[in-house]
Amino acid sequence: MIQQLSAPELKAMIDSGARLLDQAYHDHLVSLDRNTTIVFECHHGIRSQSAAEYCLGLGFRNLFNLRGGIDAWSQLVDPSVPRY
Image 1 (cartoon, one colour):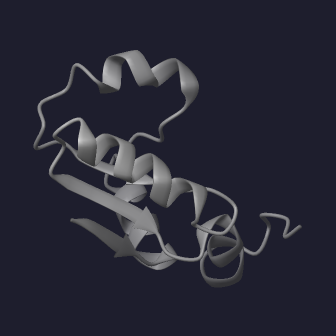
Image 2 (tube, rainbow, N blue to C red):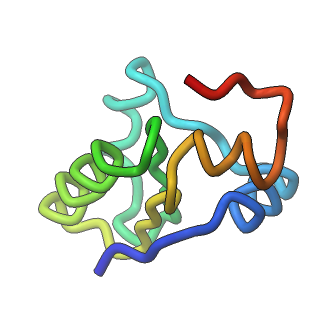
C-alpha cells in the first residue's frame, strides 16, 4: 500500500535526514532493503504515485506519495518554491 504524505509531514522527514530521489539514485534505490522508507513527489502528486506503484511492484513496502505534490509543498511548507 502506498501511503499519502502531506507537505508538512515530508518537511519533517527531510529535516530528519531523508534523501530526495533523483535519476542518478535509481540504480542504488533498487538495491536497497525492501523495508526502506521512500517518498515520491512530483508537481501535483500524480506521476509520483505511478513511480511509487512501480516500486511497490519491485517489492518495496514502506512507500509514501506527497499528496498534492510540489504545489502543495509551496503552499503549505515553503512559499519560496515557485508555483507553476
